[in-house]
Image (cartoon, rainbow, N blue to C red; front, top):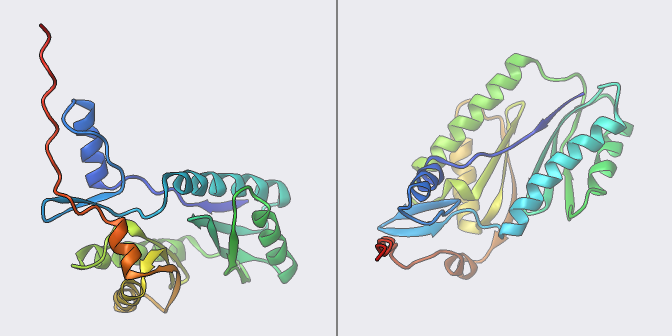
Length: 219
């Protein structure tokens, strides 16, 4: 069976910070952006939720392999803050329900959004096109002046773009508007967890980033 387990690597800034940490320049900070000289957290999940999401995706893939050893389903499992989005294709409604039941039983899954379609699997060309659409939507969000790309997860299936993340209503609407403006997008589905502007303000680190102090020399 082919199932799309989505793993999201650290962005360029995170990798740069990691490299600096390895040579003793700065502490490691994951999922951040520098705005006006300040370091701002952009992955709004708690650290435990981030780990849970990775484990949910891996465990779901293994259990679906066991449930469908004949490989008749193609399922993409995407977890964000313990909410799981299922996309892909299955042969019939019974298999669609079974996939949801299997994933719902994985540890720490809080809810499942079942967007599986009934029919044949997508072709390599269709999957490549979806990947390109995802890249373009991501680029549009990166270029935006009031959205943090690392706080939004993008999934595309047959031209339908799903947006996940913890965002304010303002951010959700803006992200959806940007996605709709990308060529190749047939539909945008918001799967956001909406937070208040006050909560958003509390999440953001507003203090200016201070350079790490030099290590004390040995006597």
